[in-house]
Image (cartoon, rainbow, N blue to C red):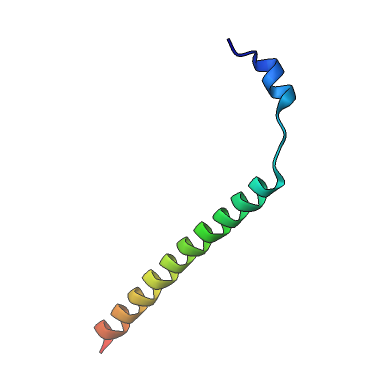
Length: 52
C-alpha cells in the first residue's frame, strides 16, 4: 500500500516541468488573443461593408 507522506517526502520537483508549463500557458494565451483579434477584424469589416 502507498504511504502518501513518504511519497511526498521523496518527491523532487523538476524545473523543466515549470518551464514547459509556462510555455504551454503562453502559447494558449497567444492563441486566444489571435482569435479575438481575428473576430474583431471581421466584425469591423462587416460594419464597414454595411455602412457602404
